[in-house]
Amino acid sequence: MAVIAEFESSVFINCPFDDHYAPLLEALVFCVVYAGLKPRLASESLEAGQNRLDKIFQLIGSCRYSIHDLSLCRASAVGEYFRMNMPFELGLDLGYRKSNVQNGAQKKFLIFEAEPYDLKKALSDIAGQDVAFHRGNFQLVMKSVRDFLRVEAEVQLPGAAKLESDYATFQGWMTEKKIHEGHSEHEALRIPTRERIDEMVAWVGLGKPIQFVPV
Image 1 (cartoon, rainbow, N blue to C red):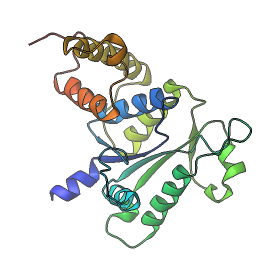
Image 2 (image 1 turned 135 degrees about the horizontal axis):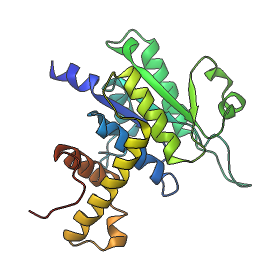
Image 3 (image 1 turned 90 degrees about the vertical axis):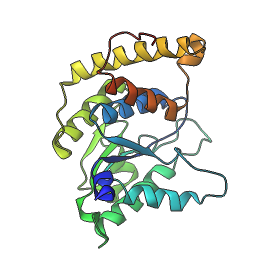
């Protein structure tokens, strides 16, 4: 039963892991945590010697919901390679859903592109899949993730404007907390993703306080 409960409440996030994408990832993860679900990322516990592909398969199989961001489907400069990890992991996830494995048919996807119709030009096989665009805007990410989780996971969530306001409140709370713990303001804004997720969970658990109050 515990395995089923974890599957039902987990969200696999397949996206770029770099400084440029970080603000979008933070907004995306915030929505997942706010909804009472558990974000799962391939970078969360990749230890030395652990096979990355095996880890990704494990994550895909343990999450009912998946968010795939394929917004880097084109190079942004001459000589730059576009990222293939994201479409590769989407393919693995789609294969899992189409297979006869337990829970596979129950999986639900949200797919992002940067601009409307980008993926139809770069990945024609994706025809028939609903795709959202975000144009590098965290607000569009939050709106799409909010709507996806409200409909597919049937969780109760406020409107996008309220969610965005609470996100700003969380950022202020977390910054104050990290400064209290001995970080500089610069460091407080650049803590690792795993630590940031832990703080989101703590903030929600405390009732979404407006200000950080040292204990």
